[in-house]
Length: 263
Image (cartoon, rainbow, N blue to C red):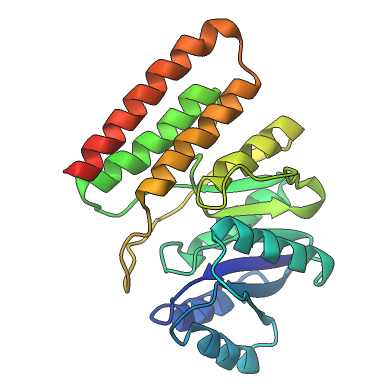
């Protein structure tokens, strides 16, 4: 099976070299699969693309796509997905952060579930065995409640709906005609499409690491967009008697987000 790891980057010069090395080391533990790394760079203003090109000279399974401008993480992933499907003929692709928070050593656990026949494998912080860093309580609250809110409102049996560490079987992948978000909330929309398609979904525990070289990229926009995307998805399948549930949960979620950001 050919598996492509897609990494969107923007000013990741502090972490990208070591990350690519870590990935290559993990690939050697999974020799029955063929591995690629596709870096989609959103017009970094540092030397991130140059570092990737240096690694490309050493490892022929590293590919670099340079975007002309920063278009958002969703657009970067869609560009990477089209590339690995059309150009590399990948059987599966993995969404993987370029800032060091995802641990390459967790990759074999996701691959094992794919080998068992699952179509969409989520690296989860919130199942037994998973973990997140000792964040400030505000960020921990936002992250944890964000997943709980999505799970409750959409009535999904998924514990980490906002995870960005996922492995997808290409032949089972369902891409919405138009994503509801260009930013981090795209994850919720893609998960919704996979659930609706009847894909076999599994969660495996991961160790979510601290960023070593930069700060959190989460913004107010991401919070608002996540609430918006979740609300739209619920409204599409809404029964009238559930309208109050949406209003109440949305109000609570926005209040918690406001409180956490403020303090």
